[in-house]
Image 1 (tube, rainbow, N blue to C red):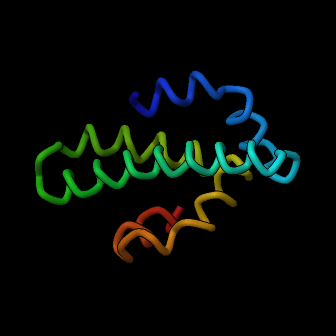
Image 2 (image 1 turned 135 degrees about the vertical axis):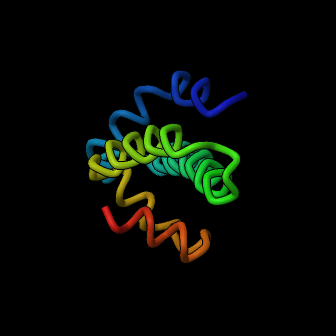
Length: 98
């Protein structure tokens, strides 16, 4: 299953988690964090491909705009912060520069 299918199948948990992760049960928080991790893996893949010139600037900009939109959700940002050390510094710096 792809990331978008997983998000659609877990829309309630995802939307509530983005709004306020502290209101999720332990199981819901686990699912929410896995959804954020799947999204961040997708963004990281695009970041690497852009760096290798496999996708052009316009495509990368679409990814970057979407990423900034997701990071605007408090719960998403909290989840990202809990997992960011699992990614290379170059990607973390790009994400966290806002």
